[in-house]
Image (cartoon, rainbow, N blue to C red; front, side, top):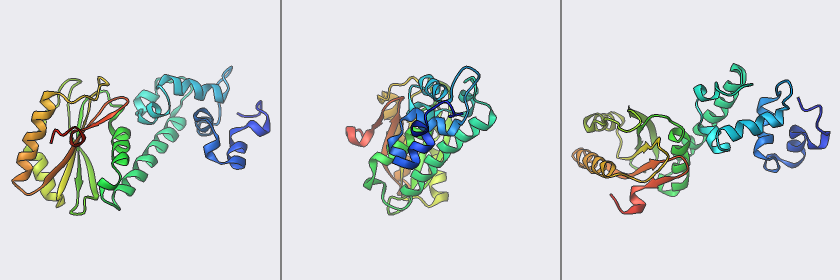
Length: 223
């Protein structure tokens, strides 16, 4: 609890008085956790949690299984952290569904970083877009090992037709952490681009998600 913290410094009172932007990351997390452990205050627990995942971005990408490893995070607290992450994802997805994705490339990267950045295995996802380049749906279509994912162009084409997509953005993560595209990534991009062109669906970009960065094929001139 916050009873040992002066009232003016307690996260809840500070937020109400000064607004959420005035709080440090640990203070915001402490508000979610509400209680600490015996011998560990809630602010200290929040700082330990942030340290375990390398900061707020890493924490928001953590899945429930990773959160289980943190002492002091029971089912209720894990659920609350997971709920905050899902709200962030849905908020960004809703925004991307109302305007062309080219109007907010930073949001697209942020969205994919939240979706794929913390995965321990490689995931290949596709953002299906309408004729106005607005997000229709993000689907994780293929999952692989730490080093390789089997991607079937036929399945991507089939799903694009089912959703009536006019364009797609391809995305996958590199669990190793480095976001640099490989030659295999470049070959896969061209293969999918050719397959989708047969049904008049454009590939607008391919984004590679690492631990701390997202690399765009379009920005690199690789499309």
